Length: 171
Ligand SMILES: CC(C)(COP(=O)(O)OP(=O)(O)OC[C@H]1O[C@@H](n2cnc3c(N)ncnc32)[C@H](O)[C@@H]1OP(=O)(O)O)[C@@H](O)C(=O)NCCC(=O)NCCS
Image (tube, rainbow, N blue to C red; front, side, top):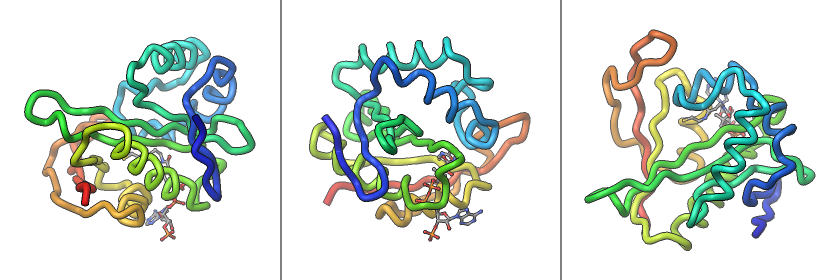
């Protein structure tokens, strides 16, 4: 499975992606905008565990963002449970060397379409730290709507922050 886009492609993670995963993911500027469960520093062992995790997923929920066949970022969904089973969170990151080229905007659009086509989902949502204007902009460009400011909802590096909730609801 490969979704070819103008700036990048999306495909499942593979064994062999570990070195490029570490090269791009081991970055404080990425980690500071993500959940703490994203490792920092990002080691070879973290990369190996991540790829084995995604290979075991059934159905697959995570895709690598590739450029020239090299995995340079990731995008995935986390479906909700119970009454939220038709909602899923979408999360993503891209190697800093590639920021500002419209890559994640294209990836979010394509991954949203992939998610709606392959899963019984009605809603995709993302929570953005208040200081992450680039990610908020990506979501708006990909058709997500700003819904709410969740006051003091997240704590990162000891700082409690507002989280901005964006969502895309299936037409
Ligand atoms: C946020 C991130 C995904 C953006 O990826 P990207 O491929 O650089 O995004 P794009 O190039 O598609 O779009 C970025 C947009 O944000 C804008 N932008 C960038 N920095 C900005 C800033 N400091 N303030 C306002 N807008 C900013 C860009 O100008 C661009 O908008 P434009 O096309 O209208 O000019 C990437 O920086 C990243 O991986 N960050 C770390 C992880 C992360 O934040 N993940 C999301 C968690 S919610």
